[in-house]
Image (tube, rainbow, N blue to C red):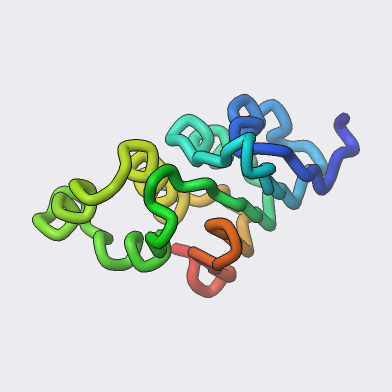
Length: 137
């Protein structure tokens, strides 16, 4: 597996422990789960992804429990300051798993893997977040 450059994973759950590929030829990572598998992004997944300094492209399809109409990209923008009143009201409206996904996305946006150039995050059939190098911190 050291020559694995573009794995297509069946679920974001496979991100846990992915840091074992740090320094490998892995440069593109895709997780597009089947509906029954789920694709919830967790804080532990973000921590694992942050260690892949050679990662250039990340594509994720998320499954949001109970919040099918939420635009996570807008939620990341609107609630950019964790702990504010707006953030608290947003979190109160969301399912607990979606709150964790929002926190994980924030962490990924604030502190992406060093080489990351492109992120595409989908929520079913609609794009939630799309960022290129110029938009990364």
